[in-house]
View 1 (tube, rainbow, N blue to C red):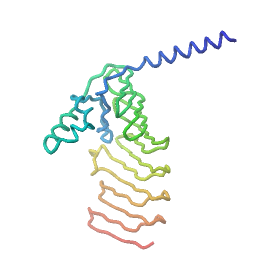
View 2: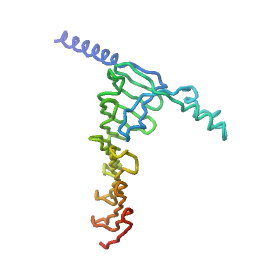
View 3: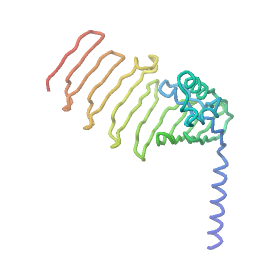
View 4: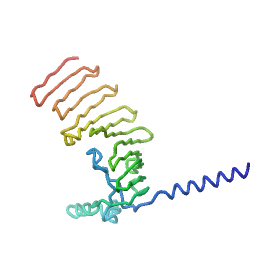
Length: 230
């Protein structure tokens, strides 16, 4: 029995080492660029070209810069470029984020990813397909903070409050080009009911009473507005 116990410990120890070795560590200058998340385009791994300048932003020497000198410094510090990464499993660990992810044979993000944002104190799980984030769930203090899904060119972004109640829900039609002009934004009150809906596609806006009935409605295309009592 003792032999089996120590054999099990030995197996688990070696298994953990193998799992740890599966991940390839990338330089701290690398980071996940999420700017294309709500455009339905592939996300990319980038690197700060002048990482030494980026790492000194909080220093007193930078804080004492003024005007053009400061703006020039920030421009140089945040310059970045997309990096090509060979297929494999990687992680990035710096003062801003810890990101574990996989790169497929096409050099794109694939499968599951896990991002810990040290600045916002959030944890985000990703599901990638050909570099595109088709699903994300962001948690703060083990509670869902935000969630996104992408299906059939419809991007949905949901934001929650500290009690887990939905605050806003944005639906973007990427077939129409994406952006605010092709977004339907819904806001919710504390009781979970819709408080307002801004449809930028149809150019309509509706405000609701707490009982769910329409309070105010406008239509910019038709150029009319109405108000209702409870």
